[in-house]
Length: 444
Image (cartoon, rainbow, N blue to C red; front, side, top):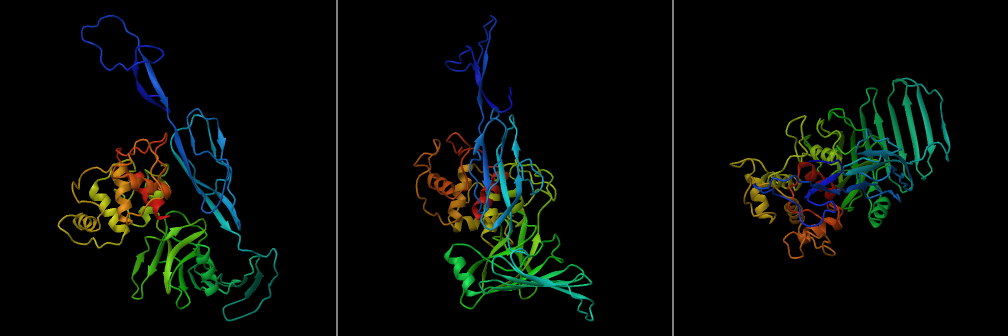
């Protein structure tokens, strides 16, 4: 018995649906009977990742009978909104998003932005000339940008170019692209830029911009240098085609490469933490799972799979609605925390030992299915059991439950908002799609 957008609540022997539902008809009952089905309308959540923007008036929930609505586009100082991505959308350039009456299912939407770095408007530009060199004609253009930075670009006849930028805060950046399209960039960030960013609780933006590629061999390389004594600094590298599956790949001095798991996609770049300096490649490591293309958690799945936190069942299948075992979650959290998982008598032994040593789990029942309460609790413990500012306000989360503080922490940090109608649903199975979403929201 099904009805789109509703949950079946049982059969009743009266049209007013009073009393208890009928569950059994006695063997000896022979007269005709009439029953009425009880339906409860489902409420679905709508979540937004505005990436620094603001929008008023967009709904946080809806149901099948909600009138058709169109999202109000967000605004962000210093940026141009370039579109939405998310549920039932293709790409990231959807400027108009309409949800028709009769739609169902939880929805999530991500806002995308382009940084207004300046341009010829508001500044002076000179160039053109035909200066000859051994490599062919060179065209030079110098631009004074609106943000006070100066950009100088030299383009040769063979298509190669060099762009040098000096920011108003003293940071510098150089982007070189050869005739084959291979890009290398270098940036030196100033003490002033770093101090200002740290004071405002923001990453410092490098004055370079690159385009990610699918192949690490052709990916742009960016060398970042910080002033002596700057310490750990959050740095954002602008990327023209950033997406959830875009990652920074650190290039070690010996030439080996390693994905930076905590490199985070922003509206217009990749953020990572640098100490002293680093050389990274910017790679689109998105997986092509055919069963997540229209899934509500596709962005979260793209994020975690690109970073090797949660792998697909195969190269083309992720299985977002499948359950997850306790051993699998131990492994996911251990990977996130850079634990050494090589070796072991079983594929999960080292993750199991890590979980026990860190107080994440007792290591029991590795093949047991994870529920929502256990997922949030293990994530909270792996984070160090930070204190929440208050208590969870869900009707189905008792204050004295083992997971109450974990749920309160998760709500406070935007990791979960429950399932609607004041419920968290702690005992429901946590699917692979939900686990990806919890991790994605936590890491962002």
